[in-house]
Amino acid sequence: MPAFYRAPMPIPGTEPGHVIRHEPLTGFAALEDAASNERVLYRSNAVAGDRPIAVSGIIALPKGRPPSGGWPIVSWAHGTVGVADACSPSRDVLGAAAHVFNQAPHRLLNLLLRNGYAVAMTDYEGLGTEGRHPFLLGDSEARGVLDIVRAARNLYPDVLSPRFAIVGHSQGGQAALFAGARAAERLAGSGLEAVGVIAYAPASDILGLFRLAMAQSQPFEGAAFIPLYFTGAAEGDPEHVRLDALLKDARARELYSQVDTRCRVELSQPDSWGGIDVKETVLAEGADTHALEAQLATMHPGTLTIPIPIRLVQGRLDTRVEPLQTLRVHAQLTQRGATIDYIGCPFADHFGVMGDDLPGTLGWLRQRFTGQPPDGKWEGSCQTLTAEELKSSAAVSPTP
Image 1 (tube, helix red, strand yellow):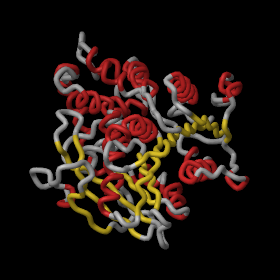
Image 2 (cartoon, rainbow, N blue to C red; image 1 turned 135 degrees about the vertical axis):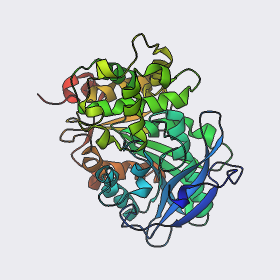
Image 3 (cartoon, rainbow, N blue to C red; image 1 turned 135 degrees about the horizontal axis):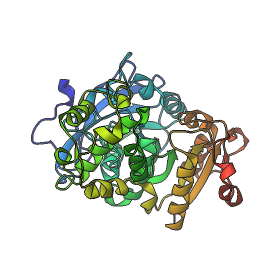
């Protein structure tokens, strides 16, 4: 582990967001349209035991002079790269296994910088730093996403606004929704104000996806997500989710240990999880999965109460997060009182939503931060779906 990511013990500071150390960041991990990129290590808390931990990330400032009141902040929540430290966005280098996925949101993030938003990008708990990243554990992700906003304000108090939006994709879309639900409590007394959440193709129905994956007897790429699910569940309930009892044998335990050295795309390879008969290889016969499944169920964002406005964006051609999944999340959050704009992108796949919705994203953020409604220049290929359109599966499902 590089020295930057090794936190002194005890963890310095007393409050989440305390900046432990920082340094200028260059190379492929940096955002090219920023006036400055700073790699940061900041204080947070693990969900397990609420113990102090260090989390890493990036803070990027726009070029030019900040407006009165400071640059508004976008806290970015990244998509799935894996749980191995080398996969983290702040460590990204050309040729790294997660490089393509870490670069995927840069077009969006650079556009935000050019439009006057500072960008704070957490790596999440345990991704880059000590410990194992608890994949899709919503409260853990929320702390990383929210505490880096505090860190940004602590590092740049004179140029950053206390107002921020939360934006994320895939795993990060789910993380953004959890952060929106936890913001008021987590940031109480900080002076920070969350103005809204944008979630692109948020991960959902994790328990259902796990059950479907565990029934597969033919090798498939998506098996790579199984060990990642285990990491979140085990951290969420370490007393009862005991992987040593759940995994079938030494071969299954060896496969699981690969999460510490391989990124998600590598776990999908034939010599890893992508090449096994999941049904016969992974779980011990008669394994009690009740605690595991209970934790996976808590990862579903449709159970949240989110008091700030939401922009939920889904690509019609997405096969990784199915449109009907996101439609269910919309219905469930709406039933719990959320205010949601549901945006359908008819030509976008899983990653394409971040590009196709650029005009709408900018217009929506402008409205949330300034109160000014979008004008014609914010129109794009994505559109807000009406209640009637949402009732029709044809409006949100992939074409045959």
